Length: 410
Image (tube, rainbow, N blue to C red; front, side):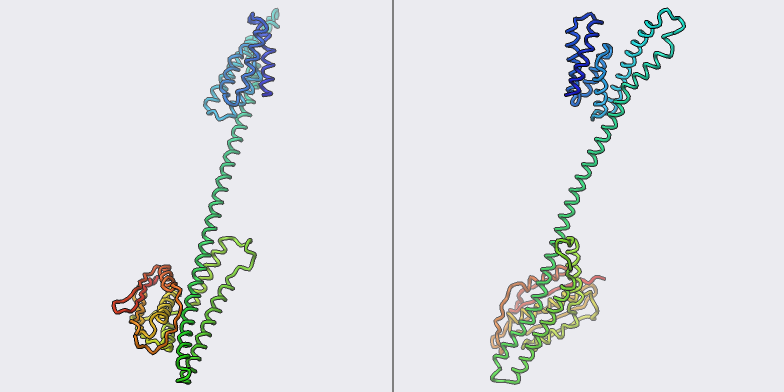
């Protein structure tokens, strides 16, 4: 607004000389100058129009400020560089022609009667060229610099916004991964607690029921059952201590707010791996079956194929599947005969636990163990987690069968 006002005043004053030279009334020349100079009001929106107007009034020696500001605005705007170069060249030519003609007239008038000075020599064109470049080159170059700097700043701002969005997405993904890792760790701990507590405590309850039944009739057997209950309790406590010890070792000893989200996921994964390495192995299946035999169950272990070492996670999963299947037998089929089959194959290991129907005249006391309904779910999760196949269901004979096949990575 300020530049437009100054330009209008300048053109208005220059309009007086234009009116006198053109033979027009002075008010007309002043009004014309005010209108021409006010065109700077639209320089930001239509810079090409301002430059064209300044070139149009150049022969009338008006609008020098308007020409300078118009060229600067044109060079700094988003107008294609090709158009800017053409208009700047046209403006330069127009100013050069007007300057050359005016200077030649002035020199001719000043040198009348001095034949030793030739106004058509090198002096007039060189001075006209320097004056033209001095008026047009600085605003064009400065406008190009400002426009390039403005575009650079806009590009840097957009890049910063893009990086901020990417960092936000990465933070969200890290939070999701950490949440997933925490959920996986909770599920793993829940499965471990269920397997340890459910199996050991189920056997303890079975032995306690048998102890209650024979306490008065067979004191010696009652003593043996009481010893077995104590052994089962100590084994359960030992496994729980080992599990909790792994969790304590993998805990991050800093404030939660200072722990990176990715570190939480790594700590949870490390805890799971450590627990898997320290877990039970397949060579302990015979002892597992013997514990069920001591509780009064008829358990037969059949091993097919040549036994070999497997990855810790595979052996641990196979052991837990058999353990949970035997626990379910103690809960739902007291006194039923059980067959545990373990097959060592070339690229997989398979296990199957099948029990017959519960005999009607069983002498084993029913411990009335509660069931949370998570045993089969936990077994399926374990097997599917390492890419295995899990199948369970009732048999035609009235019993129940649990089968699992686990792949072995070579």
